[in-house]
Image: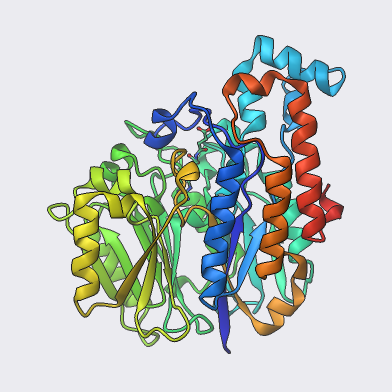
Length: 439
Ligand code: SUG
């Protein structure tokens, strides 16, 4: 059956700020406390969506979650009116207020893990919301994310939306950022590669390993994947400790191509061998490995070369890598890209996009999108308001220009009036997407 890869980008919310909240994410630590520009951030994200739409791809969007998250603040013991809650949280627990305000659901690669209907036993498209249990500010996303997914994929014949796994570190799950689907063509049965950083119960040294093997196995089971087509691979400790807090910071795959850094996996040849075994009879794997000599892991992580979208663009015979401009500005990664496209490998073009506001919090082009491979029937069955055309992007940008600040410092979160501003902005965005029910 023919199918399309639909990219659901996160629409960057009005409270985008640099909280320094993510241990192990070097960009987040480096920019902690800096002044952000939520307006520019959202416009950059929307321009990326427009770029892909104009190349003939189907572009979806996921709306920002309500921020601040008052449920979280109330469960942390704050009470009274909204203004009283904010004022007392700002006074006694500013770190909790920052968590409640984080716009981190913009990185929709962490929203869920998705298995297309071609891979699942019941022939439905399965989505499991990520519990994001490792980082406090991200652990509060999943109830609203599940509600959003249920609204968007509201057809039980086509879709199965699973709630997040148990909130325990043994089940730590960060969604599609640690999941790669490989196949001959989008609509054909594929191989799903799950990359984990630790086993349940295992404690690791250094930066946190955010994905557990138990979580990946649970998802493969509940999605009804054929065990011989699902591969579990361990992320290398060297990559995690160099700042690759998700596998998608050092690896991206699409169709039959896996583009990855030499240090991405604990056992590179074993991982490639396992993928080849699982792909037997389906497709021939094309690995594109970047050596540490060509691109040192530090450069890969700083530039986010691998946190790119690897896309099949209509009319192009080779794949296109949509990479952050930071990878063009760094000598080693730019030189590598030039050599790669001059060669005759599976990646024939690199397009650089500016998502700098998100990058400063460790979120490149790949973090900003959730890939959902969908048949035509499934596309028709999902909520149509989130499938964008040029006009919808214009309308969203108009709302952003009218309602978002262009300067947000950490201290601004203490102002109760900012919460009203965020609510107004979100309501207007939801109206454009025909999603008033989520307000
Ligand atoms: O979880 N940054 C996110 C970045 C997520 C990137 N996603 C993927 N690689 N798929 C994170 O670390 C920083 C927020 C702050 O510090 O304000 C943050 O949450």
